[in-house]
Image 1 (tube, rainbow, N blue to C red):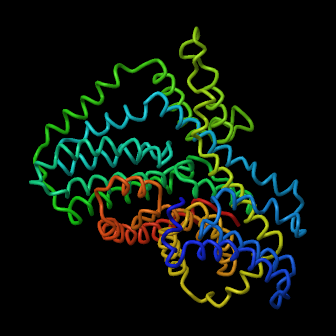
Image 2 (cartoon, rainbow, N blue to C red):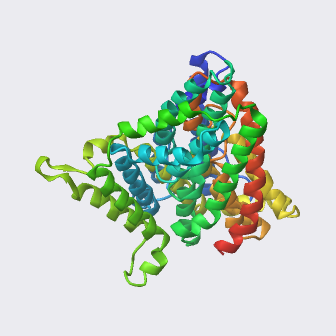
Image 3 (cartoon, rainbow, N blue to C red):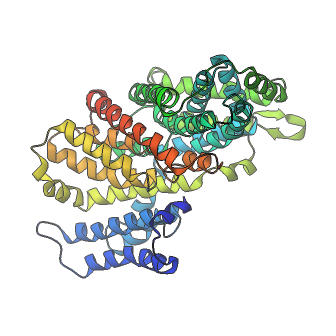
Length: 487
């Protein structure tokens, strides 16, 4: 997000840009013209320069994040670290196409307003008191974020939330507590919902691809939900409880105007159309296929989560809604809205991880971190989760995950534990930044409505950051090693 770099600009913008632009190349040049530390190979030293080059450009957003993600294609062959054909192959990892299929399904739901219909029905089921309305918005937002991008979900939910809040301001006697609570609930639940599924947020899918590529460990869609869904549910409840009971004082008397507004918006959608019905069927079949893939693969050899996602994508372009007009469930024009940059970020992260391992930088890093070998593992997990959560307040969660996952793998080897014990909590932590508007797209979207101060978001989000640290550390430490075994 381009606004993130503003946080760092405390000097003249031109000087800042020049310094950040040169920072990456200078670090790389330093490694090219100096000798490596003791025990490190020349290739590992050069890769250290490449990794820091990418990290600095990601942190300061010198160029768009996906552009930085392309650097391995340029630098690895030039420095003799990996042939170009092997580097480019990393940008076509199967998990990238799983996420691609998820994006396509989400776009199709948006095209036919199925996501809005689902959200309105969920919100009408929860009740019309302030705390129940907030619960309804959170459930709807979190559920949609499991399947649709959190940015699109928050953009859709914002105007609905603003309309409901406008009807409720009179009930608060002019106090905007309900408005602030509702908007923050939407922003936070958009991030929390994504934790539940592999396609819910980029770090989850990046982790799955990293583990399969590095340790030959495959994490299926249903397997991930065993750990992701409980964390998501507990985080969602904690968020609702904190916002409605402590962070803001709410009037919980019934609000029939809000219910009338939601019913009117549902009525304005009209009766469910053919396109929505087809999308709903494909969506349900896809999710069920992901969940029951281990059973289905007994009868369909070679069936994978990626194959299921691609089959769903093909169906979107094959099934007609109006055959006479040649209108299908999905049009190629709509795919212009697909976040292609995220897919490039995946590729760059996987290329970075592969190069770190193949050059020996992982092994050297593991030896360098041997001094922490005596610390309790759960303390190390807590430190990792804490650092990543607060770091992603200012940096991209995908870029952070891409940089940290190889390091966490090396650190796990040093501690003599399975890499999943550190990498799974690290990936989850990358999506749990709640304090800053620049931390996540949903935070930025909601903050942009102009109803919140930075203090509102930081005060409310800091407590949720702490909750995230506790839940991810506890559940991640207890469950990750038991569910997944990389070694």
